[in-house]
Length: 483
Image 1 (cartoon, rainbow, N blue to C red):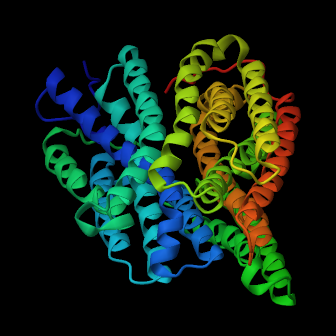
Image 2 (image 1 turned 180 degrees about the vertical axis):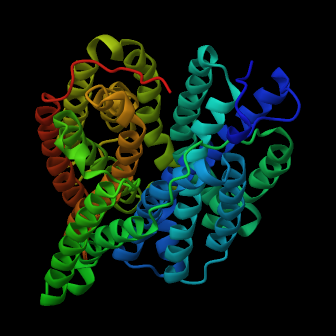
């Protein structure tokens, strides 16, 4: 059932039984489920959080973007830390940190504390999540890993369904009088159970590489991205002043320093968090652009949709979750098809998925542009079509991009792509969220939310049309790089 790793890779002192291996898989899938759940559950609860904590529009954007941005920063270093110090150890540390920061999110007394703890959640998730793949590789023989990764994909689909529904249910039922805070408290008992079981069941493994962690590179990258996003999200509060432009310029300068530092590190034979030489691979450079564009539209779409449904049409959080449910169901239906056909028609699926998402958003624009509530079924139909597009493209995007990357660089390139996906999501929330909230600032009537959301839909649909054009330059099919 399991590989027989060398002592350097952290072999068990006793042979793992199939039951123990299955239990280990269950533990890491629980961790992944909580990460994915927290990436979606807050969007439905956002209006309730704003009312309870008196959060402004920019603070709500930061509540969501802080998690994705910190997760992206954590992914940069989390995988390397697991390789060096043990994947089980880092998974357990990340899970424990995720539990503590979830509790602190639930205890937040003001928007600033919640944003800070959401960033903490993202960082700890960034430590935990990269270990999942390493633990699966250490626990399963090569021929059986496909089933394990298939289970991981199924968990992603389940989390996409559970996030909006569970968030709406917990907010509306006001469990134990906790309101929106229950969406964070629920992580605590699940984490405790996973920690207890994981201590017994998880295998330990390490990489044979002894390369030092590129902490300066990781800090430079995170700082540069933060400087770029800060003035965009704060536009509604600060406006565009010389300080905002100065922060943008500083972000560009810091990222230029980051690339120069990484290039010098590579020249010395060290292992940077990002090898600039990867940008010379056309498929990878195009893939980065496609990933930023594709994932940049998802987080902002669901944030603005949730606010529109609750503040613009008067729906409850639970009713909002029910409206979003068809999107998740559509994604689940096509994700299996996309994975099955990726090796033959990966690029075609990506382009089809992006165009389908654009079409669904144009349909949704048509039904909300007048400001009236179009009713459940019109909303559900448009969202279902969008979900079909997402399921075709999202699960296979990374593998199609990696098809153009040499096998020796696939691991590093995959880590960078995963990070860029998170950064794209945070950037989308910053830009499209700002467009939405600026449009509804001081809105005297509910119909203004429909108008603001229709603007976001037009911009987002154009974004996915551009994404489809960029994807024309990707490799034709996906490949799976073997360790």
